[in-house]
Length: 441
Image 1: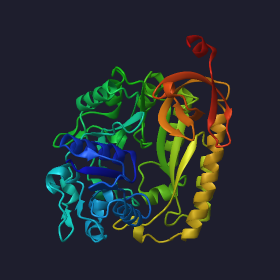
Image 2: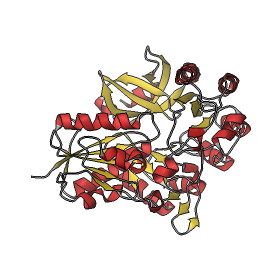
Image 3: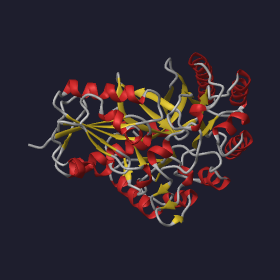
Image 4: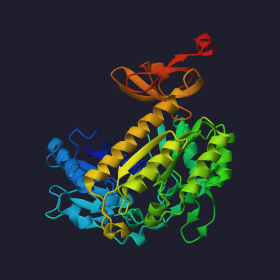
């Protein structure tokens, strides 16, 4: 009888694409993929080092897995596994820990998945994580996360990702187009392009920089069957005018950018070793809104970074308040081992970090509501999701407005033209079918 395997993913879209690809390696070898709660024989937990409490979250997921299946084999992979293999191996119930260079060889390395007396560690220096492994999520949802780039050559003082994932490296445009065609054949309508530093696409092992993100986007325009491409996140210094113009003129790339800012204070941006100052960010937003007034712009911000005074925070708050953006992802700064920021002076108390984060989250809600309200009465296309909650299904407009409608099986994974009518109690947009759609029924 085939062994059952279950997966759990912490962290980013990139991790989801990689978990899904590792999952396919298992099913190709005859394992049966099951849900987390279905008493699996093997649990694979893909970890993250960016979000807070990585250790706590990892322990909790391991504990839950063993609650469902006390004798299960538990393997931990991902960023946290690369950074703290020894620490993870000591978590009760963990049988194996695999680093960045080893995670895609998991099935070969662990073979029969028989428990041993001691936890096994398969881990090499991050410098050996220099091969690009193609990955995309599959069968999980309406949209697919397609990994096109990995690693990062930047040296932001708060970040452990270069230590966890290695140097910047990419797939080839030819391979990405091939994957996009495979995804299209499966019936998926939307692809989200993911990477650690997506705008840095084009560096290949042993060859250096040979292609660019702009060239990749041009090539993907011609993929048949995919209705929508989204860019998961792109650094402001790498978001060129030619990329913005391509998206503005594109029938496939959605008017939606997620652009990390991290701080609205030039002083803090310098301490963070970001590769731009706030004027660059202002210019990017102005350029986008000039070409696409309805474009959705999301922003990452870190508050409570060492040295951030109340004045610096207020500067960030006012900067964001005045900026024509649509929503924020807010992170209270959290210390990371082996980063330059860890030992910087001017530590902000945790309570103060949380207060600042709360203030920006309230601002984000206001920004989002204002952005949504600008679109009431307009007609637009919605791609409906497969996820159903309490008889309600959701979908997204091209510019990333989340819409709620009563569940209708015919709508799943379909694109429909609708009119946006107003916000419901949960802050989601409600819609009505346009006369054109009604005539088609």
